[in-house]
Image 1 (cartoon, rainbow, N blue to C red):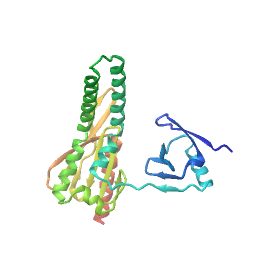
Image 2: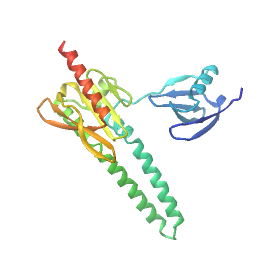
Image 3: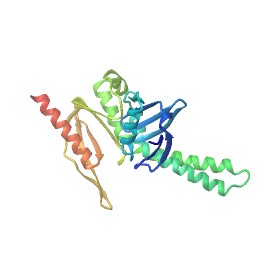
Image 4: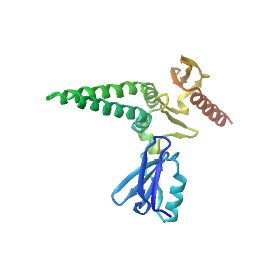
Length: 244
């Protein structure tokens, strides 16, 4: 049996090669298996990667420990970074492309100007994507004010880790596809309307529903139909549970 292993990720189409005997530990979170050698991390492999089951079986056979990665407490920053993952990748790709163009068109004394221009474009791109998350953070702030708590401190108090959390009290998810953060506390909600079509473009539809808060104020929640339906279902289930 060969000690050389090759992993091809079906999500990012990248290849990493390594010797199985070089691995000293495998750590996993909600999305990735991270491989470590004595020199540190060598690769992160998606759960969906081709051959991941073979890798894990081989690690167990070789006695390589597979441990759960230490996770940060869930926080507003964690939600932001997780939701902006794809946007950051786009920004990095743009920066690399712009730098390649800048180098190819390089003239003495102009390199710094090219870099500042391209970096500025990347920053503006990230800011534009970040604006899509403002509604989610506005809703979190409204709940902090109404229920008199800090979201980050509440996550620590409840010992909530990871990038999403759903229980009878909290519904916290991120939607990378529509760049949306949904973090709802049950006590904040007085009523939730049914999802309705909000915007339609080239066959793609986005939906909205209105959340009526405990103080009577209305907040608009926009996202994919399935995402909003899950929020509605969660609230109705909790409503029934707390009525019985």
